Image (tube, rainbow, N blue to C red; front, side):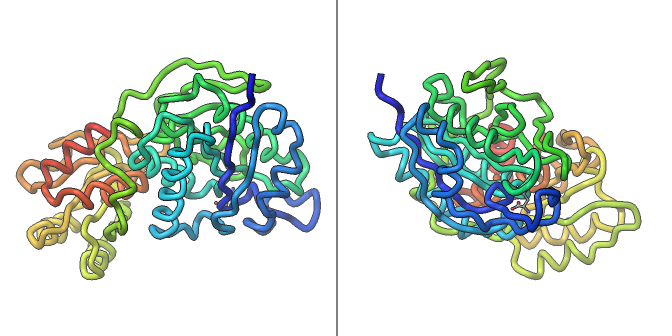
Length: 331
Ligand SMILES: NC(=O)C[C@H](N)C(=O)O
């Protein structure tokens, strides 16, 4: 049988990082090694697929911007339309990998596998995790059984849904978890699936990267004890079209913050309540705050940074808070 054709789009991150010494697992520079070198380091890739690399960016992912998301999204969308491309792998820093994975889930219309991958240690370190993660990513992207499952993330032998996976711990190689568990495992080039995403994604999404040329500004402000409304008001004054409340617990909002959010909603800014609890928040309408009365939106199970991505994408299409809430339930 002919080998599938896989394109690796490289964007930087620790998987392209380099340290001064093999003992440097945490002290290193991200985004140093070019994609051809990453591919050449794993000759076994060519036994599972015809692999070629493209350097899209060379940046640490904490510096990803909306422009980077749009450029990458448009490149992925163009590639998956090509009959000579069977799957796309994206090497990415881990800090915002969960945002890019969700963004692509929302805006790229394809059933071809799109797999994001990073590493927690640079390739120069002892027990570097990048090569195995990348081998796993290519093997998942090259397999027919990965089709139609939405954008995927392969880290630490797990296959997670790009929708809900998040970086939950730093330094450890077991850094990525979904609150609802992995979709499967990849072991020695074979996939073992256990569940499927039910939220709308890729080919069933109403959003399309080919129709999106800019994303509105969406800000995140963090709830904690003794919080004031300063950050919230500053975001509103800076022109944010939506504010994600990274709330305590159930997305609860401190008394000191509620009036500012009511005022900003009256000015047309969307207020979206999410939760910053570590293992996965889940915010319900009218629990903790009267969302119907205030015309606020809840982020469902999306963490604040994923809620930011969905809000930005949704606001390219609607300014209606009820529509926005529908979208938050469906995606
Ligand atoms: N492990 C990593 O990739 C972290 C790095 N700061 C990045 O996101 O680019």
